Length: 398
Image (cartoon, rainbow, N blue to C red):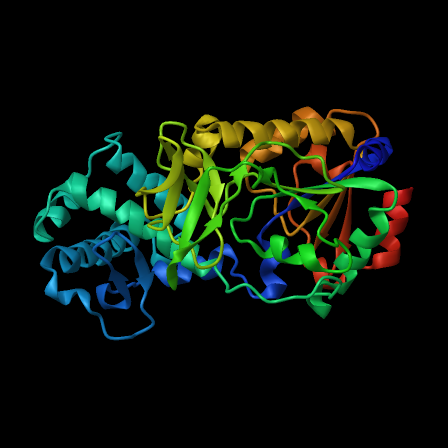
């Protein structure tokens, strides 16, 4: 992007978006209720765990890891812990929610609470509680990530992705002519990124990451001799259309080094394929790094809020969120039900408190709203695939 393009962008007025799980639903991504169903009644033979720490739903395929007793004991601990939580800790399995469950088990893992039954389950599973909880945490987060992953769809630049998003893409195409668009998403999936090559966005999607001078690489799993450069988080958002992953993403990882840099992987690069480019004398070599087997995204209700300040990445994207809200007069909310109290607090302090701020809510059904949100909002039924385009455009321009 040249200086003239940058000046043009800066002259445009900003419009902010806030996206929730309902935005990705028409593309086949699960809502929270569907994720919950995968963990209620989960049996040990429905998951597999590798010796390198990777874990996945095995889809009923034969397991190879029964020859490793500690791996089977780990799976048994998972089954027993989930069964105990659903049968005794909460009122009924129907009350299970993976985010509140995350808070519960993290309290135990971190020593904030004790549960005698969980300690007994660890003994029954032939291991110490600390080791079982650490492995459980890695496994649980990988299973959640698997539910949010889809193989990338090959698109040609200028091609629209899906008729389900035709209205939304038309909205982006028209708004970008006069506005800089800031998309803030609470989703961990990478569906929005797949829209970058559509005719509406045309590759003009900034996400705060850059490959320029990046010392981070990945070895492709199907061809380990081939290395690809991986982008790292620079925190620069200067594109006509910008995407802020407020809760992290399933394709983001903390690179195992003292800098703890956030990087984005690419298709075909796994957590055990990360390489750092290092100088040795007059030559450069690639040093393999091994980190946690799960990607970097936030879970839980309390722990999510507590971790907003845990890494410079989250501090930066939340700072951008606050700044963008303060510079926008219109906030378009798609598929978010206003259940995140800290996000709601940020809306209150940095957007709703300003006179003339308007919230335009696009969803399949109306949610119960706080009075301060209700009084300055307008609802558009139909969700991202079926809203009244002309009515929404008129409200935006009005």
